[in-house]
Image 1 (cartoon, helix red, strand yellow):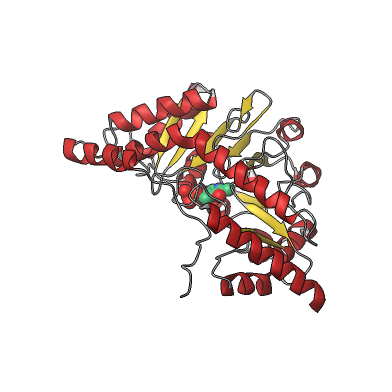
Image 2: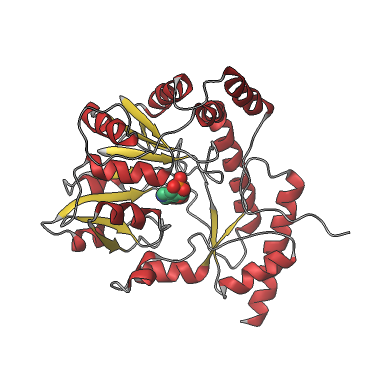
Length: 354
Ligand SMILES: *Cc1c(COP(=O)(O)O)cnc(C)c1O
């Protein structure tokens, strides 16, 4: 009998989530209300910032953050190439011009040296995603003196020194999409120490009951989502601990194979476990699929490939050689064993072919 396929990602949803959401539904107060407010307060405490505004998605959080920073047509916003198109969409929604930067080869995060080359008098903001659970070099990026939007969609709960991801930029944004570190189906959050910034986000996330007209949106979160998010937040540290445990097993098993492993920094929360191979990544993904394990390219397509913009050689290299294998709290020990066996076998077979 064929074993069931191990999916590339899967949310961890316990009974407590179902109970909390059911309670909200039964209460009759299902849209943005007390649960959303409580979720904002709890995230603020977790991240160590002053203010938060919940929104409908990570993309909405990016869009409203850019607007709150005053970004508009004629401005430039720097974003890395090796990331999903959400960043590109958010910048384009403001009318500003996206400027694409390359990544650091080792960390796969936006490269401060390449950013420096792309700064112009029109640069109004830099979006800094902490990719795959590893924080970007905030220290060097901060020195440019340009407002940073920390994109923590893949790094909820990550920290460096005493600072949580999301507390270091002008604003921090989060996504609670189904595949992320914690989820409420769809959802997002903007956090900041600036009351003014969060007030502006609150102003534009809803359109009703305003005295003056200006373009506003409907980017609200529901109380059903927030109830789920609050329960997930309580489990976040456990989720991270299990991800780190699995990463440790992978490291031990793969150390001697002809692969490059992700940087095992002590602050990595392993949203993804990316391995770099010497062979064709698509063939690897096919072989893993034959073994009943869903893998993926960590990024579907780099942004500079869509835009015909300047070369990003490190992004190209990562795109050609990196694959993401399953890592999430609900992987069982036997799933992990299957994954380790498949990677080990394919790696040995592929060496013979090259
Ligand atoms: C998922 C993701 C987003 C977008 O979040 P949505 O909630 O799907 O809109 C933005 N940035 C990064 C780095 C992401 O991984």
